[in-house]
Length: 454
Image (cartoon, rainbow, N blue to C red):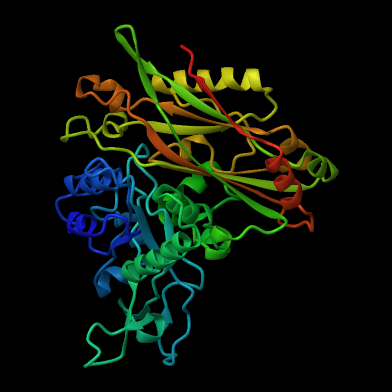
């Protein structure tokens, strides 16, 4: 179906939406299937050199007796195939709908909480991607005794598929949420027609935030790294916002970089990790120093598409499934030379099967939570004084099958990525945008390409 579309009109920009999933014949731990791998293969451009943005539904909790067990059932009901796809955006559901004309029934979810119909990846092996990545409106349910049902007042309005029968109808659950996400992605693509699919995907996820109700629902404490992992595995990165995705304002500035690097190379008879990219961020140091004791936020999202390993050989291992992996790092208090040394050490640690040491406690999620799958997003929170010296971001590769299965002849391929960085002073009336624009105009090239050293 996709091939016929691209053969007939290869230059048209598309957002591919598929709200079809299956709960049978899949592994429950989140490992790839032939279906999800086929999506990863076509989105990566391995089939036709065209990268594609693919959006799939997380799958639904089905049946009045099952839905009535909310929210416990949502924890045990896993993302359906092919929602474990690395490159696709998998969409779950939350709800803001808590009103109906019939007051005799009890609502299952409170406004802002996870929808009763949404599945999660709580029991996925933690080495597999975070799913769903985002949640959007999927409706609520009402409870009648031991059973629960959907309701027109608690569903979304849409056009009927057969206008001779009816003009409008209602729908809900993750199918509705997925359609909403596809519309939002199309609006981002329309706003930024030169944006890669990796960038549109990154902006959608980068713009997401959790509601306070989600935090209350899945936090027992004040938000430990482990509790954030539970929140990620149920509600993804939260609810995306079109305004945050496409708008830059004076106290919230979005920076977008689209680049490619060659992750591996052949040195003699050995295949080794090759390039890393280092970016000097155009921070307004004087402004940040003026608000030295006030909190600022730095959000970073790295989005790229992996090519899945051919056949099912090694699919139980994330390194053999993914063609290559990328990571990002912020320099913190390190100068440029020490920062490059630290990146080299982090790359070696991951190659040896160890998680790289956390450089700062300021990251909300941390490496263990964010360094899975093919999109990595995290938020740094600290003072203006601390951020004024954190002006370098590195993007570097980690091990993948392009290098480990070098006989397949892809060890010298390049991988595209989108790096999205947002600097925000949410509680302050401060102009960050003007000095950043002035700094960018004085530069010719803000990137530095170097090699990982072993």
